[in-house]
Image (cartoon, rainbow, N blue to C red; front, side, top):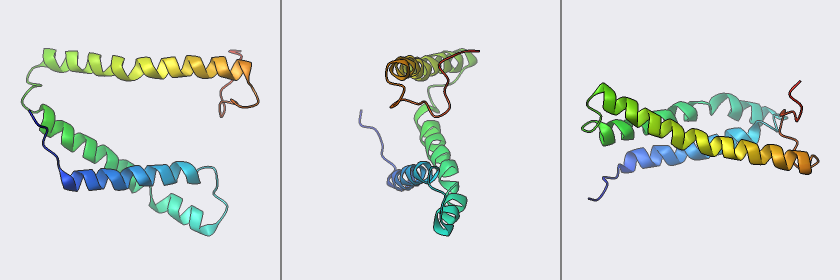
Amino acid sequence: MEKERFLDIDLLRAISILGVIVLHTLSYNLNSTIDNLLWNWLNFVVVGFVFCSGYVMVIRYKNTLTSIAVVTNWYKKRILRLLLPFYYYLAAHYLLMSIFPKYFSGLGLKTDIG
């Protein structure tokens, strides 16, 4: 079964991805007027990205997620699929931060709990 592609949504998603990359890059360099202007006016791309993802998910799952039990099971799988890699990354980052503190400062993460 071939998945249906939505070229308009793919274009919006590509624009949103590029916008999010620009926003993350600008977050460290808000030194000029143009940087501030882009920072203020590019935040719509986050909403656009969420819209694209939601639109494609509705089309993809509208016939399969038909009961509360199925939706609950879907969310459990999705949360595990998203959270486990995040916690693996976080553990690896803390390990690298403790071994190489100069290179892995953590952007605000602290090695001590207290």
